[in-house]
Length: 387
Image 1 (cartoon, rainbow, N blue to C red):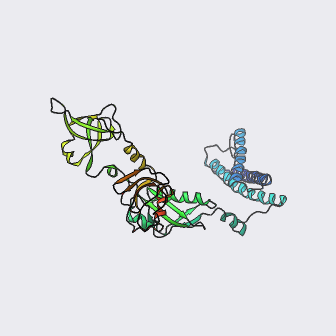
Image 2: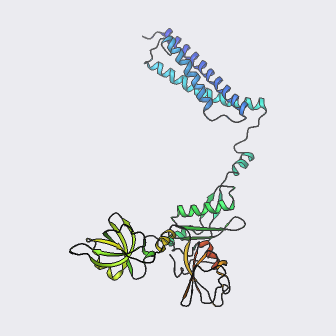
Image 3: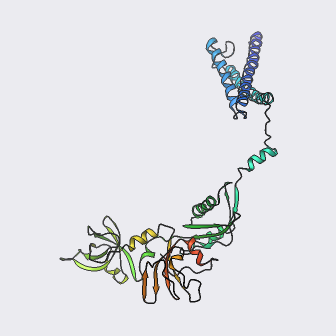
């Protein structure tokens, strides 16, 4: 039978412990919150008063348990009364520390004459509005960049009229760059060019898809084929090579001539005439030999061009067009070649005068090429020749 006096004694001791630890936690929270507000004029971080209040309670309980060997009277540590007392003490301590923190914050504001900002007031709304994102609406329709392949129609539909959010306070240049990166990354577009109006809105968006593979670099009537071969030590990209067969022959036999495109260990990719492709079975082994020819950097130039924004396109000078009589150096970009009848003028001087019926090969970025077409649309045909 339980001794009534023991029950009363334990209840009295538990009540004193609850009240004492709650007051200790509230005092700790009050001092921490009040001191933080006094020194920094800012609200204390959420949860810090409660954490320090519980730390004080845990310190008192630990020191008492070490001194007496129990949390409550002579009740052992593994008894359920000890567990209930410990949980109740910590719960009341957390509540008291939180309440004490709020009280200490208000007292410090009153003493230091600090005005607390209402989270739902006009001042808080003005502060939050300074960090709101700016919504940018893209125009309709989205045009195709000159010199680039058209993207999927679904991408055009997704971009037309789309709303993009950007941070507030960006400069026009930073806003344009952020928009271009966002379109290229989120819509899987190879190239994007954005033109902003004076008021910061988007005036025009040009998108395009960059060529992949070797198809755009293979001349008409030729094919690119991979063969197993031992290359010449001095063979490099774009070199003309002779392809000799070494399988099933006592003497090497010339099979075809072509141009070396790439070489990875024993696998070479060569560009040969389409009619000779059947003469190069994939299972045979070949030897590549270079032969004298004029050196050229054309393939290296084409490889570099595929990785940059600039593109090469052709431009016709109409007899009644505005470019007749202009200098080649005045055009956007760089004029590479002028085809004038049966003559070709490579890298013409800046003061070379353009004539009627000239065909120009121009190296320029799509944004520069828009100067020749001020109102591009999705229905515009692609350039007649590009790399």
